[in-house]
Amino acid sequence: MDASVASPGYLSISGVGKTFGSGASQTEALGEIDLAVRGGEFLAIVGPSGCGKSTLLQIAAGLALPTRGLVQFNGQTVTAPPSGIVYLFQQYGKSLFPWRTVLDNVAFAVEHRPGMSRAAARDASRAYLDMVGLADFAGHYPAQLSGGMQQRVTIARALAAQPRVLLMDEPFSSVDALTRLELHAIVQDLWQKHGFTAVLVTHDADEAVFLADRIAVLSARPSRVVRVLETGLPRPRDRLETPELPRYLALRHELLAMLLGKGA
Ligand SMILES: Nc1ncnc2c1ncn2[C@@H]1O[C@H](COP(=O)(O)OP(=O)(O)O)[C@@H](O)[C@H]1O
Ligand SMILES: [Mg+2]
Image 1 (tube, rainbow, N blue to C red):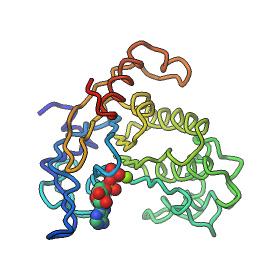
Image 2 (image 1 turned 45 degrees about the horizontal axis):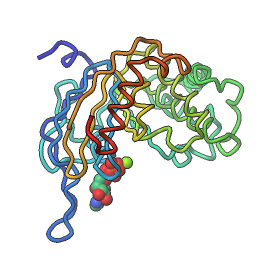
Image 3 (image 1 turned 30 degrees about the vertical axis):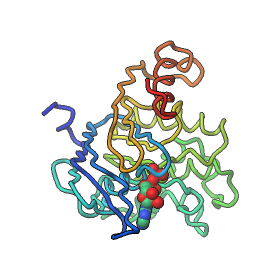
Image 4 (image 1 turned 90 degrees about the horizontal axis):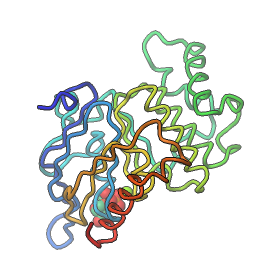
């Protein structure tokens, strides 16, 4: 086995299939997915709408069980949400507690740790708010923030949980285009600093090429992995410069052609 696959934070998805319902109303979402997520890498998963990307991520997080195959995290079979894996939902608005301040939303991820006082939890949380540029909004409530700021709070809370693996299901799709570019830079920066394994589901070819080390392309239902692209772009990637590199443009072209069904 390749060393990076056996390093902490690796996830192995072997022969995973998922069929919903039974009889005539049966939907075969995931056909057979094989994917080895290397410890510390940034992996993007792209594929057509309805091909089972969210289903796959939920199975990887232990939030749903596969019909066939298995997921292993650090060598243990995943049957329930393992500690060390954090899942970032697309619906940031619904995942924050409206009655808690921004700081206390982040503190929620740390205050249940054994031996952690409320004051220590708040101190730790301030550091994470600072990392996402929201130090000045600690006392605000979620409803007082823009969508992009709320999503930054959920990112701070996810990081405060000190994940080995951060699973993200289209986390940037409902913020405006400029905010999305800012969030890309923030996530890349935090991933480089903290060294967690990142898995990002997206339907945005630019986002996948900009952020990922590797991009797994899924087919339509019942889905399987049709290609894994290595991006090989230098880091840190710059939101202005990187998209002008010939390699970036070639990858984006290849990926879009696959998503549009035009071959590569
Ligand atoms: N709980 C469920 N019950 C029945 N069908 C489902 C359920 N969840 C997802 N599906 C179906 O499985 C397929 C894949 O869904 P999903 O994982 O949400 O796709 P994606 O995230 O790629 O858009 C879709 O056809 C969807 O309708
Ligand atoms: Mg989805």
